[in-house]
Image (cartoon, rainbow, N blue to C red; front, side):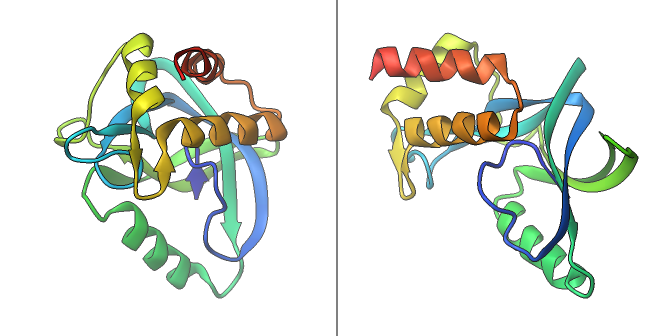
Length: 168
């Protein structure tokens, strides 16, 4: 399981976690949120893995505890595939000890919630949006803090966090 954009725990028993890099994808605020971090009238943005030539996303790969694989996969599918904005793919991720195949959820660029906005437009939306799980800016700040704790650099998110602070 690869959780590039997700800042919270995986929601299943973990046997091992490794920092991992997924080539050809980047962490991006490319998914409109109309429930959790925005509303229908004022959508927010949430992170997703978006395909991009030459890109790489570093995150965390989790190995599910033995015996919990089926329940973990069922739970992930229930959570991640609820709106069909994500596609489930098994992709190779590079870890410190080699490559492993990871079940990964990536954005469907043909889905209505997909968007590609420049960073300034993203910052303006994130600074003002809020939904059922709180403000969009808190989601951004929690993600950047979590990445910093893990020692994972993401200059685009750092810029967004700073710009959103300026706008808030």
